[in-house]
Length: 430
Image (cartoon, rainbow, N blue to C red; front, side):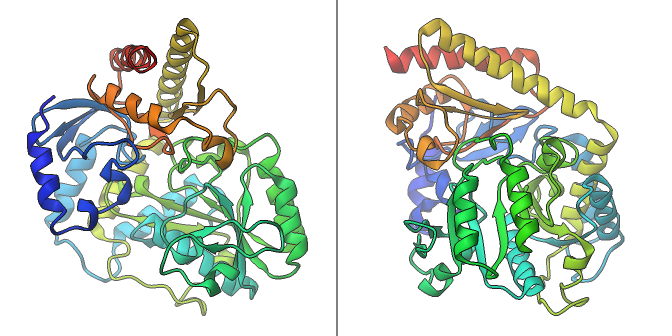
């Protein structure tokens, strides 16, 4: 594998871009080495600046359900750009995609387009605060909701202990309004609520976590959160930026039978273009300006190019339910193959998988929350990452990321990934 061009680009990038990358995980800090610079992608393959080809398992962190550069989405974008790139004014396609989202996700009665998942979560929190007249929020350790100040808070030591800023630039005042609970721990949530009666505006979480690796909710956890929020008048926000339209047509909430008050979306609803959205009960969404007093705006919100790509993507998913059968089958085939290899090799690592999302954790312990995810052998994962990369499999460069499959992966591709995984495990455990 030749990486000379990527190496040169990274050296040059560090002179002009902080750390040489525009998003931290791309820097390969967690796995060692330097990032690979991507030139193009098509279907299940991604190609770097040195001409290397990889089967890839990131899919732009989720949205490429149909594979890269799908012909229908390419055509939609090509047609849209003939009419200019941005208007800063309403368009027909915004109405059509909003109507489509409302029809596909039963909990969403009204939706507002924004430009990223971070913008969606920030806005949803603001609306929840405006709607309830309360200041505090509950988030979960290991869930990532973008880089908004309210979300970059480390957990306090107990129910009445304030969190602390997890990043310079986040004020203590913001931290005082953010309460952090362990994922999958209903009792801890109840303690936070009891200690902050009548002060909590919203509870936000990833229904299936993708940002400490793939971590599933325990049976009854989501239902328990819904009950607590109902009892306390707290707005339940499901961050489905990764899971929305991926785990089912109606997202994780449809799969688990949970109805949130607000939902945040991203990635997939732009067909890979920069986009985000938040939506939910009309009663809450009517607090958003200009219908209500909570201000949120954006010149590029509902950008016509992103809307064209997203409308085409969602229409395809809506009209082709077999996509979800294909994704489910691909995820199960990969998981079964990985588990068979580990059994054959006498290894006892933990594989978490649901549908087309998975993470192989290098720990023998069950991974149900952030502390158990952190028990993974990170140096060993770094070796595994490079062993897979050398075999032409491009993964997320962190133990704490979910991998995402697309329907562009054939059985032959999946078998190649399974074989590469077994070879990599043999190499790193020899």
